[in-house]
Length: 312
Image 1 (cartoon, rainbow, N blue to C red):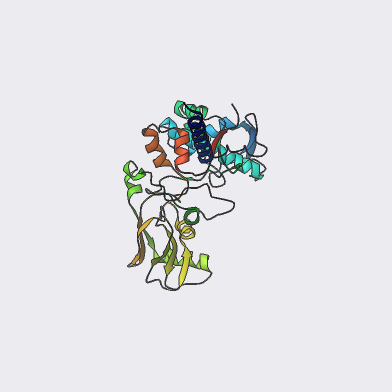
Image 2: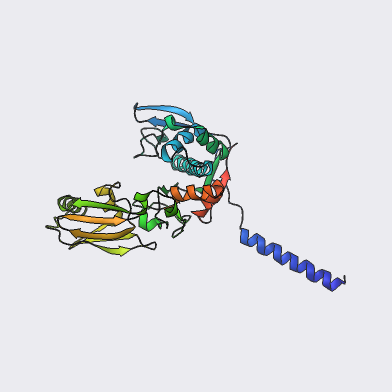
């Protein structure tokens, strides 16, 4: 090969290497004060009113048992384990406390915790991802997830009532096909709420009595089509605040197909279950059934993140 050809080939190879390196991006740095060994945490046992010390992986095992169906595929359980571990590390790094502890077994305060439901699948899932956490820009993410996103994930602005800190790592409008395998009530649900109850909620949320309610409509939607503002005549409320006030088990999501007054009731219909932000558990199950790895499942619902192993 002549010298000019050799030079040309060398330059081309260098350009390709530079291009690939640029596309791949620099490896993400580990979070500040990241432990090199498995930490021991303080856990508030809500049913006992006591604080006990527990190793992180043992705690995560109990959380996965409480947050996901124990008989689901190992890789779905493993993805949940990564979220649970990340959620806990982020909370500890931020210095938040629950009754003087790093975490609480009260699911309304922190995460569900059901050690009685632990089985071999869950143990395998946690061991498989031991020490793995999600990071974004050198920081722990929040481990957002919902039961069923209704086929499309929500933007943070649509689903989260608390919007503290960066959520640039969350992928909105991700379509995971969860409705293909989820339960019938997640594919379509219907709730009828007495107007007297709705009136009380509106008084609490707006500080004003709306009077007799004769109409209701969706006043604004977000990027995924979820309701963001709800109108009741002269009264307007945030959809997520209204959902929590009437009961998240009744108004199962804000991905609505009907929102109207019929007789003496507010009729709401929709699909999905939960706020829809971050990982969808039913979507994770579907991907696990398709042999996707826990890390692939996590990255489907996030962007510009790294799954890093902090300890063995």
